Image (tube, rainbow, N blue to C red; front, side, top):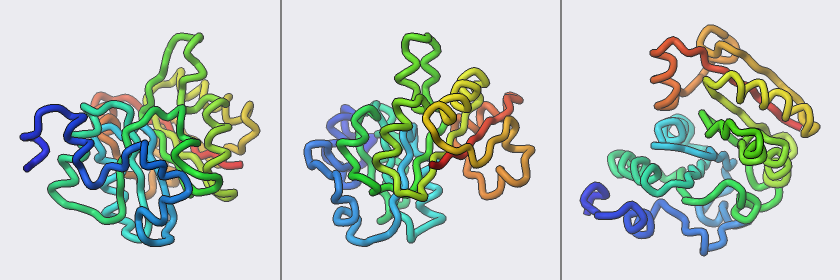
Length: 212
């Protein structure tokens, strides 16, 4: 049965072979899940999946895990997977705050954050995926030479993120405030749905790369 004919996104996710239920406790077992020892890269807040699915197509020797909090959004990515199934990608519906419960120490090679929720109110700053609190979580699951790549069109969030990289004790390897006009940073760039939409509106896309 095709996903679009299944009533209810939670039911669709529960029945989908590409989704890993949280209760399976995949922490430290991702290489067993993929049945190989390829590098593991994750996207937190994958939306409808365009970005991570394209990366998986381009890089069959890398394993990808798409993380999305909302079932109604994640199910759209699963629909796309039906069209061209890939062996090197899995999905999990979860809140990013529990990331260290889903991935073991140094189990992840790279983390992608794309057009994350800005959580504009100051009292919600800790919820931003580029806050120092989240960088502490990333420090635990990333390999020593791992890195975080972040894209957004939100200037305030980007300014905040640049400061948080420093406050977290991480190194800023590169950044741009106009990705599509920066030949070096834009090389090999894979656009997300939001990126294409915002760019068409004339919004400059910001990007940073951080490591320890």
